[in-house]
Length: 207
Ligand SMILES: C[S@@+](CC[C@H](N)C(=O)[O-])C[C@H]1O[C@@H](n2cnc3c(N)ncnc32)[C@H](O)[C@@H]1O
Image (cartoon, rainbow, N blue to C red; front, side):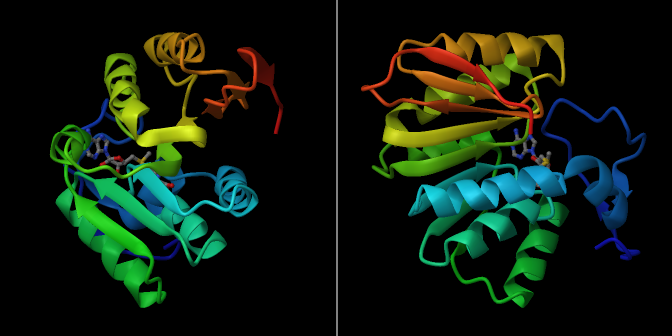
């Protein structure tokens, strides 16, 4: 992907880009500006392995960097990854299928439509990675949508909690939510837990 000259038309369902001026974007540029960093990707890999996750939901596939890490960390797990931008979805799906990954369900949908279709489905996730639509209000609504899809030991990871003032406001609100107990602020991303045996407490870790 670093060397790819492929261009993709990116249909923006998110909070817009601070880097790109056009919706036609080169894969190598998307990789540099829009995808999980190596450090965050390694952390997601370790989280999936450590918590022995079986069901994972990712909001925002992009090129599938985190998807690939989570799927390889737990080959027995089922990873569901949602992407709204059609050409990006096709590219990620094709690239990851070529890598032989069989435990990923790629879903072409907006996050909102995905949750609307999920209402009657009783899937509970062990790890949820929210990495798209970096808008405070939207993030809060996705958080509300996942509350009936978590169990006591689920971990929810949010990317870019300091991307904007309203993302930080949303993150602070989420940490104070009555169902949330421990939260971990790693600056680039934040994690929340629902473990009832734990008091509500906020931790700050420099990665
Ligand atoms: C930051 S990128 C995801 C990066 C990816 N998780 C990774 O590990 O590299 C966010 C992606 O979410 C998609 N997206 C943003 N808002 C969306 C929405 N409301 N519905 C569906 N897809 C959305 C964008 O098209 C973009 O590809």
